[in-house]
Image (tube, rainbow, N blue to C red; front, top):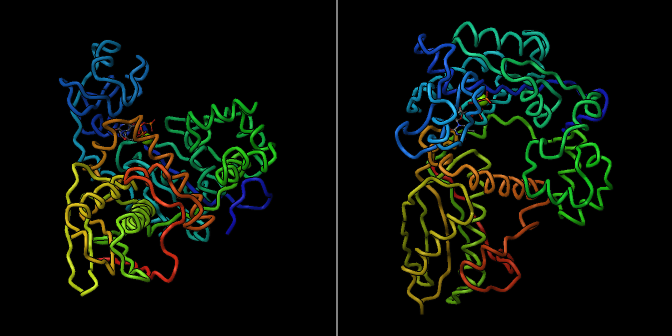
Length: 423
Ligand code: TTP
Ligand code: MG
């Protein structure tokens, strides 16, 4: 279904819930003496780490997520600095999801403290989306002593925008007809998914507000941003087709792709190009399911059917093309007997975790700026591929990792690809 914010008649049935100052609020709930105080949760209060989150009392002093702890101490010397207890926050997160699932089965966890719900069809039992949002806020307050900010809208993009509009403890409804009044005055940078780079590229085209973006001819946007231009145009108009997808988080043991070549090959360039394509597909499937992987496995089958599999465990969890590709290429270069022709080549990822797991949160937030950049790039690429197909975009920079390669992609000329999933 095409979920439009700008077309009359589309009902607001999507709810986005974002917990307020989540880690800090959980600490204040567990330790009543901390309530009303500036609480700052960080990896290591005495080390050189960064702030995970700050209570709203601490935010009044200017303390923010991802700020070096040292700076937070300067701004808020009387703050209570705590080291994070991620497994406790993850446990609260799981219990919150159970509450949401009592209202609708269509719950998509989005991060450790965020979730999307689609409550279409639940009205008879629970009332409309706004009533459900109110009840959830009340249940969360009573059952957990926590507050959350909730957005209600006809699609995920608008619901996410809405939940951010009246933090903390907000409940904001954006209806289709509100888009011109509520979204269009915003600077483009405030649109979820628009990063600094895109914002400055838009500024150079004279587009600084969502309204200007919505009104810009889509051809102009496409000329500048390629297929991403369509997406920018859509979101500025309050259009987002992506469904709330509860299945995103069901976790297999491994995810892989392999390909039987149309013709056996001992050409390193051909084989690495296949590896790139396989790695991209594996990484993308991880991201689609909200998973990260720690182990990469390469499978090679030679012409005589002798088969080898070799694995490498990475330092950190990843869901990024380049990490999976680098590991596969390294395994390939170390283990391939150069003169031997290859008939099948495969890449798989295992050691999987949900990307909202506490184990990964730390690693992910270690370098927030880099991570954010990577995340916005890959999510843009994924959206393009979702809409226009796998071959829509290739990343030349990745190919360069392995040295120059011919421009035409693998997967043609009768090569047979196969998806593997270990349960
Ligand atoms: P957020 O929802 O971004 O922040 P928050 O819940 O603390 O505050 P807000 O009221 O603005 O929603 O992130 C959720 C949790 O994720 C947060 O409590 C701590 C963790 N986190 C980090 O560890 N590092 C970060 O840089 C950010 C942004 C969040
Ligand atoms: Mg939050």
